[in-house]
Image (cartoon, rainbow, N blue to C red; front, side):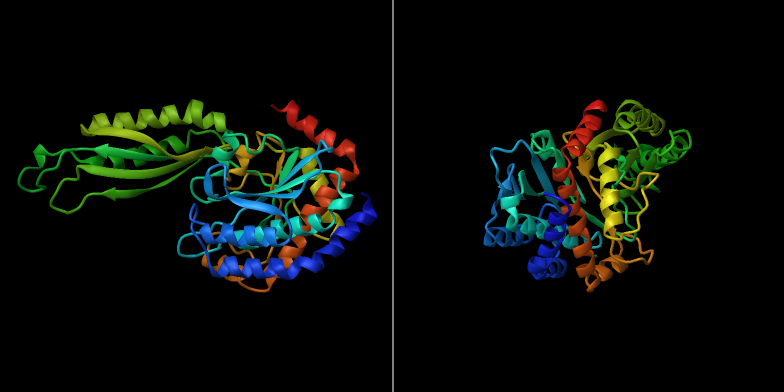
Length: 391
């Protein structure tokens, strides 16, 4: 493969782009919640199989996960994975752009399949459900789904171009308080307010926040705290998320402090408290600078102005994948308007023809990166060396 062949790959996009556009619009118009992407995953697998990519759902015992064998070259030691996301958000649909992102991954796979005779590598497309809630890449990672790959890549939508994502570690917990009910006027002294314990904890977290290490984010809300104004609440539940640039800080330093706060508030209000993990712990992104620089070069070549983020933005379960193999999560702008992700306004942009333009751009990023890696064996070795050095 050489620079001219990259040109051939890019020209191959046109043959399949209408398939990708139709998929994007279909997913956008039929959003499915995290872990419930039954029709979305079936639709993608149907397209892949129709184009002679052997694919099936129920991958790693997850009903809405899938695997597609794009190129199989047993004689090649190189294994590449293209990650696909397709879950949507409650009420506002594809406000994170996963419908178009999925189309980018599928279009990349179709172009590579059409050119498999000239590609000396094994390529899979991996469907990973529920990024937005529990993060089902995490059990897939824990069970070895990504261990064999030399690298994996996907493209996410945004309002600016960036060659890779920097993500915070992320852990979510339910905080439950149990008190004792009583009539608030007749005998309040017989009660113990679970709501008071939770409220006191919230103030404690606010005080903890100012002493936490830089980059720490503490966010949460009250899920329930009482059923009537004349009853002292005997149950209260909060849901809190704790983020940090490094996973170890949450586990080793932040959560012991959080537990001290909650236990102290339970003692102060004579209630009982319990902290329960919700979902899987998201790891920070293991950032591969060499591979990121290669993607930046691809973006420069195709005319995408980009800026490498200096700080982490949000969290994603691809962070866990990045500890199994080099993982890349470039962002491509669907609009230059500063519209926040996870809003109805962003979902509305995804519904427009702007999604077609970003699908083409994102596909060129994936194909260009794969081509450069296969064109330059030393690139692959340098990227893997950096990954292994940071273990």
